[in-house]
Image (cartoon, rainbow, N blue to C red; front, top):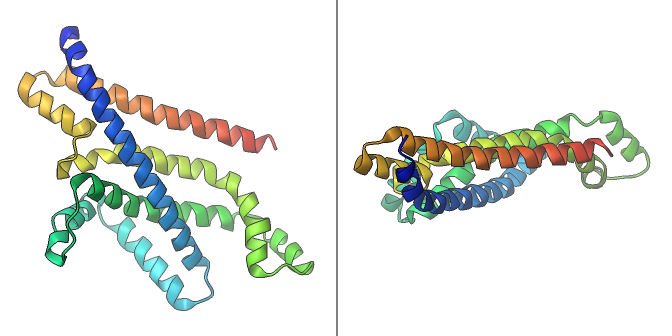
Length: 215
């Protein structure tokens, strides 16, 4: 192993890891916002809202994220939507992960004991009041681990944005391999940085899960 090479390229990889982290966090926030809208649609009593939410989830879960990124970045200009690679990466990943997060959140809500809702209704709570004050607080602890899995998948899936020229970890690794011809060292550094980010998220999820479980 060429340790001198690793020492030389490490600053570039740390910078690329920071970009990967920014993309992941922003995409996760966007995904969370969109997933809340989707869950509201899935739980709505209005048929058209339920249908649109199901259609969105079916399309984004049923097609590869890479294809979605290509449609957004390369196909967008045809309809007047021109995005920088970074913005396209955030939006593409965010819209994709939203479909998975929505199902995780809806599943957590569905797992709350139905008796809780019946008890709330019996004391005069409306449907929205029951959802906000009874169901969601109990569902929150059930959402932690599934949403954590989504976050980990998003970090690892962020490598896809290298295909639209975002200079993140995977793109940087490919660039250095073409100039150094030492894939082992390059991929080893890249993999190590991905692992640091992934296991940091897992540690946070375990911490939050244990805190909620202790209550």
